Image (cartoon, rainbow, N blue to C red; front, top):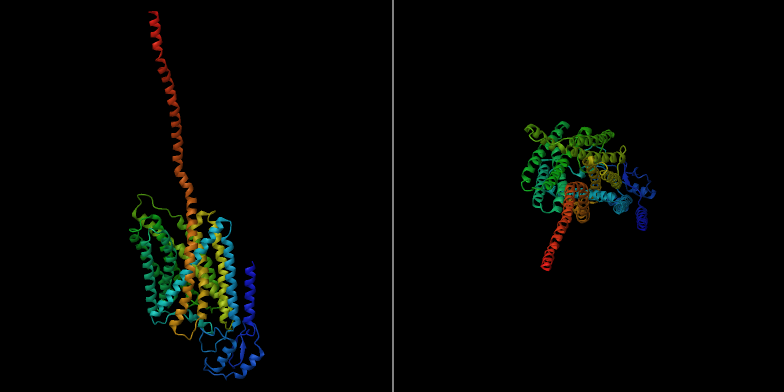
Amino acid sequence: MISSVATFAWVNLVICIATDGHDTQVALDAHGLIQPDHLLRKEPRASLVEDEAVQAPSPSSDFDSSSGIWKEIRKRAKVTAVEPFSADVPPTVVYTAQTASAASTILMGTVTLCIGIFCMTQSSHKGFNQATWKSLSCSISIFSALLVYHVLRESTNLLVEDDFATEEVAMKGLKSDEPAVAAHSGDGAVVVAMLRFVFAFGLQQAILVSSRQRKMVMMVSNTFGAQLVGLLCADAFATWQETPYWSTSPGVSFGLVCVTVLLLALCLGALPHLRNKVITDQQQQAQCREGDDTVAAWGISLTLAQFWRFVLAGQLPHYLGLQRSKYDRSETSFLFLTWIILIILTALSERAFSLVQSPAEGASRLVVLAHKLLTGASVLPRILAMTAAWCCFFWAKWLDYGMLTTGTTLVAAGEVMKAEMYNAMVCTGLAFCVMIGLLMLEEKAPQFKKCFAFFCESSMFTMCLAWNSAFQVACAFSKDAAAPEFEQVFTRCTQSQWMCIVLIPAWLLFMVPRVMDSEASKDGATGGPEAEGSEEPKAAETPKEEPEQKEAKPEEPKDAKPEAPKEEAKPEAPKEEAKEAGES
């Protein structure tokens, strides 16, 4: 409690110091006069306006960002985030106050999250404690996979010189009132993305085959490894979807969704037949099938969500960076309704597939084939759940843009960062509440266990997408736009790598063992009655044998007692002989 109060006081002190004397955002209008940003709702200081009005250049169509007046403005404002935007209009100068405000929001959100997690993990309720650790393990695994995915994507895209869309393209669009830029990727980006996916998928399968005797390694490969491969798969096919041919119309874009389903079905359908020749344990085979479903669901869901956004927006938007919305928010409402419909369809389809029974012995080949097709299609509820997660994330991003921009007003970089943090904080609270509640509800409704698992994964994935979006936006704003592209990419990758160095060891050492122990104890608890039922006949037989032994043991003395008198009766013969001898 004392540490929380001290942290809050320290944050307020930092804000007061940072905002002292620098509480406005300066921008020039068409006449060269300094105007305040309306979003800040603060008036500029009169002295600053007079000084800059005197030095203001005459209006000109040519804008020189290196002119003397802009250098003076940067010097006085102590600018920390003029870039990464570059446009044909004067840039919005960001003051230190906005950076301090965003930093304080990050700090307060982090402290609140840490204290909340500490309290939940120390709960005396065993079910609540286990649900908390499982939620933490799932969230850290997905977030780490997203960070590694971004490192691989940023670094390998340097291999090609291609006009593919990046997050900077979307960020530049925020500085102007022009229509949103449609996503566009070239053949080089598609080839690199496909190679990333194929290499990662092959490496994951090799680890699965070689780690049959290592339960920990196999579990990590089927969770973190499958999630990373699923993200690379989604990136590969979504990048392919942005090529000029597949982005001509929504119908053609949906054709790529069908191609994605067909290719993954052929690949993941034939793979188990080869893998099961090496992995013979049924439990390990089930774990491998779970990993295959993760790759398929994550890979197909993004292309499906992008197709639907194409239908709503009229053009294919990019799936990374700031998501711009310029359609009077109608597409935002439709995307929210789509999320609700997908959640309902997930529950209904899961219940429908749960009613499918295995064919009876001696069934025809047609029945067996139909059952195999239904078994392969059982991944559909998971695809719908992950598509709902993407739709929820994009809806939140579109909603943020609509709230931050009104008319022709421009948004400052610091305000965008604060909006990202608010989005991440709200998603975190809702996702943890949903997952912990559903995990505790599994015990009371075990028939809905798989459906609850899909909802938990969807909520955690949405939360991790919000985390990753805030982190990547912060990395983009903190870079030096004047530096070469290689240095910019290296800086962003280094920041993501440091996060992975902190998160992945903590996940492996503290969270995965707890989750495995809780799963083992839960399996033992659920398997206990079955084990007791299997041992009941043995326990019933042993009491039957024991009474027989007890009855046999008393019979031995009974048989011995009559023999004892016979043995004692033998000495009577000498007495009779003695009598006969006396008579004689």
